[in-house]
Image (tube, rainbow, N blue to C red; front, side, top):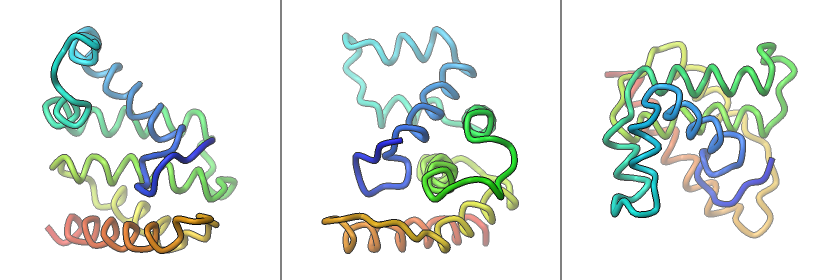
Length: 138
């Protein structure tokens, strides 16, 4: 799995699960909105379509790929799971408490080397944790 940014969902597995989750739930509507001829950005498409079903589908697809036994997950798997949750919370999707708790625990326990982006990632992780904690309170 590759990481191409400092946001938790900016890694290959989280991105793939998000894309497939939106496609599973919304099918042709999602495909049409993602067409290059559509002027909407990815952010706008996801904001329009994100809901509890896309969260559940993305997590289901992610866990199918990563394995259902979280004790065997590596740092990138935990980051991917957290990223899917973070993205949906950013998009305003109400998130179950147990899902938020898992994502928070994964981010709190993150122990990855971010090379040149260590400080930027630390700041982003703190922002994501604050966002998830607010979601857990609400």
